[in-house]
Every structure is written in C-alpha cells, then in structure tokens.
Length: 83
Image 1 (cartoon, one colour):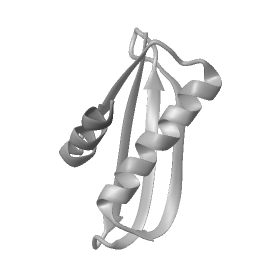
Image 2 (cartoon, rainbow, N blue to C red; image 1 turned 90 degrees about the horizontal axis):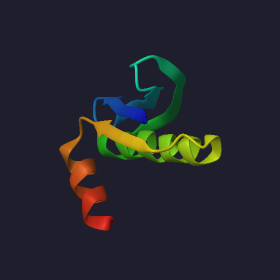
Image 3 (cartoon, rainbow, N blue to C red; image 1 turned 30 degrees about the vertical axis):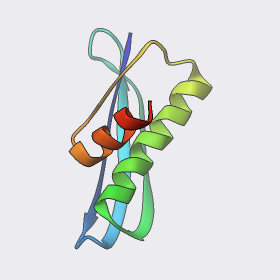
Image 4 (spheres, rainbow, N blue to C red; image 1 turned 180 degrees about the horizontal axis):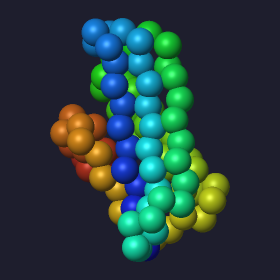
C-alpha cells in the first residue's frame, strides 16, 4: 500500500504558486518526493496540479495500490464526482 499526500499554494491567490507531494510506504516512510513551480496561478489550480503530477508519477512508477490524501475540499469534491 502506498499513500500520496499532495498540496499546492499560491501567495496572494492568484500569485506565485507551487505544488508538491510525497509518496509513503505502508510504514509511513517517504519513498518519493516531488515539487514544482507554476509561476503565477491560483490555489485551486496548483492543488489540482499537485494531484495530477502525483497520479502520473504513481502510474509511471507502479506505485499501487494507492491511497490519496489532500487538504483541498474543492479538489477532493471535484475528483470524487468525476470517478
């Protein structure tokens, strides 16, 4: 079991923005970290970017089964309505 925690933030909303995340194994030990900059963007956009990049890394790295956690209720609601 692998857990993905993702996040994103912008200073000013919109403002300078970035995203990141961490994959942890079943012991809670980090196995992969990622982060990036989006330049000038909104909180919601970079939250979604953090999730999207995490999902791509999980797919490419075979990091499954996957538990996903994030702190943006808007993004969680959006994704759970899509699935």
